[in-house]
Image 1 (cartoon, rainbow, N blue to C red):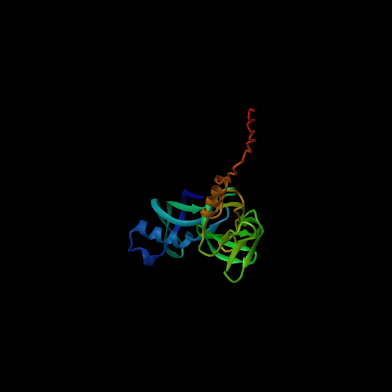
Image 2 (image 1 turned 30 degrees about the vertical axis):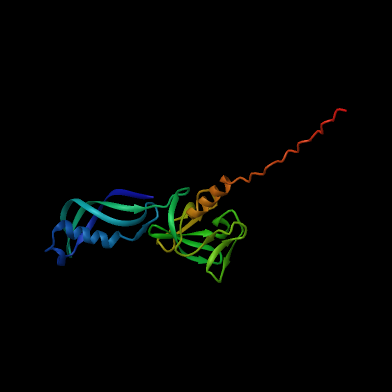
Length: 203
């Protein structure tokens, strides 16, 4: 999910930043260029750090800026199919719920909330299981499995599908209730009738 890459790029430093330390100027420009941007192959670029090996300082005719080749580290977020993530419900709607996954949101459809018939209770603003009575509302923390990923040029356009039907996923209390139910056994006593034989009196 979270990955650290070492990347290189050519950075244009404008004249108004010449008074800054070269590495600081390059870092500022790289952060403005890359952070919170989506790369359809690598994922969401969260932060740029550790700028090193700044070389060059060449100029282009007609341009007062200086150009440098820089090596730096980039922390990225990439949602992977079948990965189990811990997330928070940010919105509950008629067709499911949106869950926060790092810097983006994913959708868990009604059919993937749990192995039950689930509907939206408009009065309470939460999803409710018909038989299990499991509930899901805004702010709940859950575990979900990523089942589909479609990376787009922007974070808002990116689509992530989630599921919580697998045992052990969803809210923590759901698992506790299942374990508790399995641990209970109803003991029924069996009464064994004893036949009493009357003693025969001797005459």
